[in-house]
Amino acid sequence: MDSMFNKIRFLVFPVIFIYLSFYSANNHLKVIKILPQLFFTGHSNKTLASELPPIPTTMEKTWKLAKLYYTYHQLKNKNETEHKKEMENILTLIADMDERPAGSITEEKLNKIYNTISDSEKEVSTLSKIRGFFSFVNLMWFLGTIGIIVTIGPCLVVIIAPLASSFAALAQLIYQGIIMPCHILPIFEIGGYLLCFQFIVEGFRYNIESGFFIALLGILGSLAASYYSFIKSFERHNSPSDNDLLLYWFVQCGMLVPFSYYYESLLLSWAATIIFYTVIGFSFIPVGMGYYIGFRKDDTIFRSVITSMIVGIVFIILKMAKVSGKIIQVYQQPLTVFSSVVMFLGLLLYCSDHYYYRRQNERWYSLSYLFRQIIFLVFDLGYLYFGFVYGLEGLKNTALTYLVFFLTEKFLELCVYFKIDFSIITLAVSILMYYCSLYLHSNKDFIVSIFA
Image 1 (cartoon, helix red, strand yellow):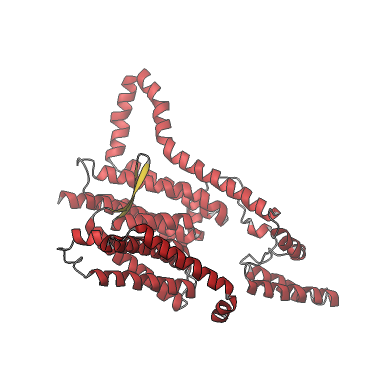
Image 2 (cartoon, one colour):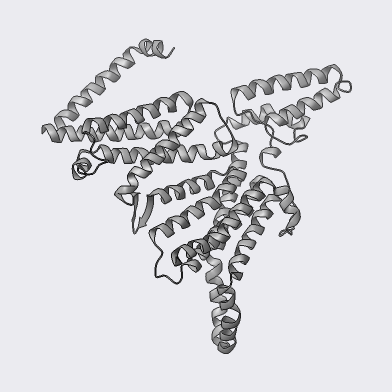
């Protein structure tokens, strides 16, 4: 009963915060009118892309842009005054095509398109320098945000400690009369979440590039606040149970989802994906000069593999059905890559001859050796097919990598089983690969006829 109360006590404020995060992400124009403004630096909705001439990123956009450019100058040469409205509509169409606000494309920027495209094809272009500079600025901003979150507590201790030693009686009075009551009552807790939410809302006042790094302080601060809620809820116990820790990581994952969606941030979507897989049993554990990467327990392998299979199949179906959306675009890369890594790593362990004989009495591992290899190959070749045909790069690259691991593992197992020296089979396979490559290079017309 006490454990259940602790869980509910821990969940109250994080769940409210997650709800407010989703609400504010979908209604940010309403929310910024309610909360006060923090910074007075002047809000600019200009992004880096909006300050540069439009550069087409696909062949389709290049074709459309060329047609609009040609039409614009044809109208201008005929009679600029008479066709002014049509020319403005063309500039608006170009802005819409590049997902820019109306009025952001001027004739001056339109005329600079060719020079910008020509410059961008250089080894070190002006455009790459500008983007590189702002990437460096964003990195400094990110590190500064991490530094603030990590060091603000220790700095307060360093500043207050000398004063506390000089005024011991006053410090004891403040500690007993203010700090401890605020800790026991949820005053610090509520204040922390409100401050984080204020920074998040402040990010909504700026363009999405600058706003993300302003909101990031509140996002990371909310993770620290949820940790404080967790410690406070379980402080009477020596250590929380494994289920309590899983609940904590699940809450951390939920806090990142609304902001990864709003800012379309790969950084936050990758972080949320890694935390999600930590919940189901796959972990990265730093130990001294290395890392443990894998499954916490034997039981979590099955859960992680099945979850990854479901995630991969869902994204394949969405791709085949041509279903798209903002949340799908944000989480496609991290979920397809990470789910396929976890799935194939689990299947590779499951396919191992040595792993099977240690677990042969358990129900899930009682399938025949040959059937286990078929399971791996079906999923691996299926992922390769859908990865190549439907352009799912994460599935394709991961499946190809683990196919090499699988073939290497089977090669070594066969060598051990048939007691064949490694060097003999390696030599035979190498000669076969050499002559296959020589044949294919000597008969290029054969390859062209297959793909053409």
